[in-house]
Each structure stands twice: as C-alpha cells, then as structure tokens.
Image (cartoon, rainbow over the protein chains, first blue to last red):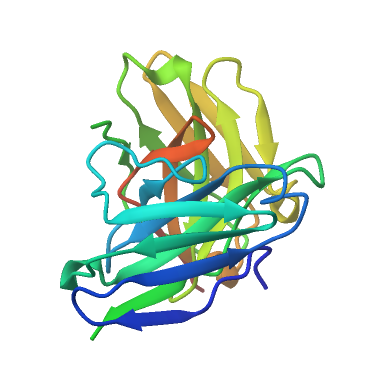
Length: 111
Length: 117
C-alpha cells in the first residue's frame, strides 16, 4: 500500500487531455513539493515535473503539474501515442525522521 | 544530460549480500546527493535511501534499516548500495538517481538483482 494514492490506470485518445491525480497527507504533499516521473516501458524513470509545477529542460509544455492542499495532479494535453507510460508522483514525507514516498503509479494507455 | 552508469546484473542466493555501483560524472559529484530506488517485477517504485556525496550523511527507509548501507567514493565519483541478508522479495531492478532541487533529476539505467536458491 503506497503512501501516496494514484489511480492504477488512465486512458485517452490522441489529442485529448488527461489528468492523473495523486492524493497524500499533511506530512507529505501538504508540507512539501511534488515531483512526477514518467517511466516508458523497459526504461528507467525520468523526471517530468518538479516543485509541483516546474518542467525540466526538454520536457514539452504539454505536461503540467498542479497542487492544492494534500493533492496534486499531472495534466497531459494533446495526448500522443508516445506518452503511453507509467507515471509516478513523489514527495518528501516529514514523518519517521523524513523519507521520500511514491505513489503506486498510473498506467496511461493511449487508445 | 548527466549520465549515471550502474554495474551489471547480479544473481544471489538467499542470505547473501549484493553491492551495486553507480558511477557519476566527476565534475558535479560532490555537489549533490544520490538516492536509491528499487522496483520489483511488475510493481511500483520504492525509495530505499539517500546519501550526500558531500559529507556522506545518509537516510535509509525504515523497512531497510539494518540491512542496507550506502556509501560514496569521491576519488572515483562512484556511489554504492549494499543490501545484506537477501530474500526472494529483494528481487528487483535497483536504480540510482541524482538528487537536485529536491527531485531525482537523472537516473541510472538500473541493475537487476535476482535472489534465488
């Protein structure tokens, strides 16, 4: 059971906008920033969004992040077939001397 | 781009230890931390711990304390993760990643560790 809660799956057709939610608590999302990682099949995860809504260099602006209270969301607009991947949210958790926590991951299918 | 290069796949028997290496670029090594994350087959990501490459401070996941040790060698700009008393449920791909701006910004390619009798 992951500390951060994500839907196990999401889907959309090319060109659509999809959102993936990430729910936590005061000790993690409520007090610290959220990062999102994209894991394409058979590859290592890649940083997609950091500090709630910042994109690293090279990440298309089709990807955006937001946070409100103890929940965060990743939005993907103009969905493309190559976006099909697993997406994970992560945040620092202040409990138990501090540690990082991940969501369980959301598998995005482009129909 | 920052490329982290990990050591190769390992097969270990239950009760044994494994040590995975993560080679980082030399010019930035001491300025960042290195974290380790593992992924069991078909499962999600699990944070294992973190080490500062600057002062070797560590922070380990509670469920692994006592079995895991993370170290760095600044002379070779390499980070290491040793996991002891291996069990079958330690079978996973182990990733190292650089910690910057409170995020894991660059990742190694992963190292498959298989624990099997």
